[in-house]
Image (cartoon, rainbow, N blue to C red):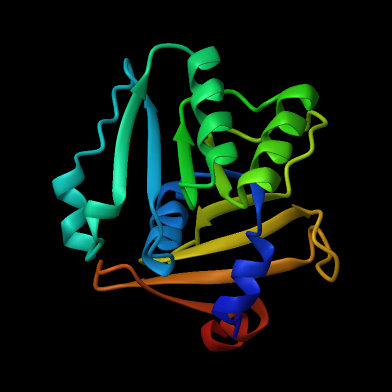
Length: 192
């Protein structure tokens, strides 16, 4: 079983990329685990609207979350960089942007190091472009397993974790975002 501290070490200071059909739940899980000041950035023209009151069903304290919409990607990365640099925000979540290029990703990590903060960028799809993300995650639903999602750590700059070898199951019980992390080997035994 993965410990909360292990996940926090993997999601250390810096920016992290998340993609897959259920990256949104992974972001919500980070909010549940961290009682920090949080900024959630979303494109103004995005058709998927996140209503703050809907998060109450997941037992999240929405008073710690500030929702900001942005006009274009340039504004989004400027806001993200400033929130990371400020140190006043523990976690910034951003949706609707393309994967940052190498220069943008270095700037984001330097800002995060200065502010001792972190960010999750929820990408629409995987890109293999070179950048300096601290980690890259893929979250997808498990075949024929209701409310269970497979988490794959595809890339990690954190020593002690082997990129592409770390996989877990995220279990969402009763849609209350009560999430347990089970190693995939244990989950495979349970399904057999």
